[in-house]
Image (tube, rainbow, N blue to C red):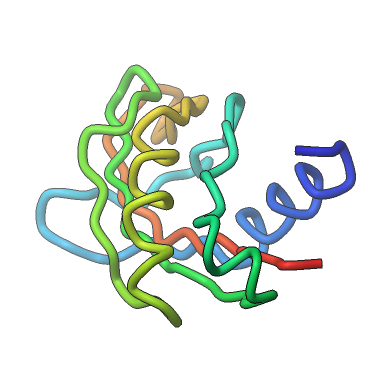
Length: 116
């Protein structure tokens, strides 16, 4: 992934990530910050056909900044879902913090697949 695409992915994450209120998740003072974001594999057939799309995944990040759970919230093409899930499982974050302590958090994360 070139630097511009990586920066673009990070900016999309930071601007579109949203916290889901739930009993088990506190509202953080500081949201999680991505520190390692290997890109998803682009499905060969969709790339050949010039098809772009997006997958929005729900990610639970533990107190160590590791992805504890990830699921698809919605997608434009089902073929993008598995590569998105596989990639995000390997992402690492600075964990969310509340009162200076690391906490579990849940975010919605859009991943854009661009055929350009």
